Image 1: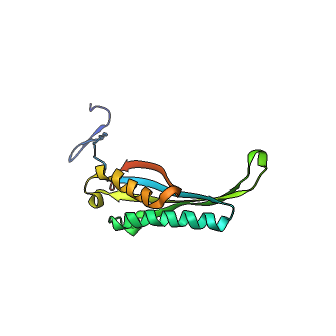
Image 2 (image 1 turned 45 degrees about the horizontal axis):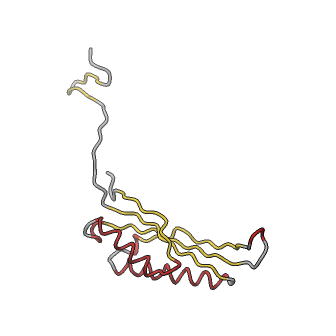
Image 3 (image 1 turned 60 degrees about the vertical axis):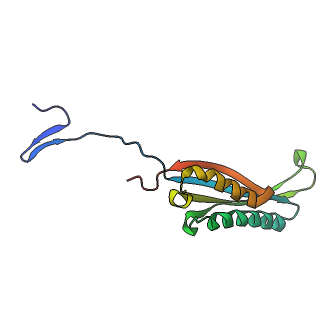
Length: 139
């Protein structure tokens, strides 16, 4: 009698099982944003767009491929003063996800420096939403 999970076959023994492998990440996924406020919605959108555009330019100049940049957020809303009173201001929020590959960075440890440069270029509207490590080809 064969142990559980094994069966006798004419051409040998078939064994099923599971395994695990440890892999070093080769991609950093970064969510960057720009958020601007103004009494005029068009000004808020323009300011956020310009800031995010400068951040994107830094990433592209560093060698990040355009296909590795994806829009994540496009939103506007109105905020009022305390208790819904006071002057309204418009808030515009734009975001982008950047896939920073090891080939661009040379070393994933350099991702922080590139992100800092992008945020500095965006200026006071810059936002860092998240960073995480990933595997480019999990297969």
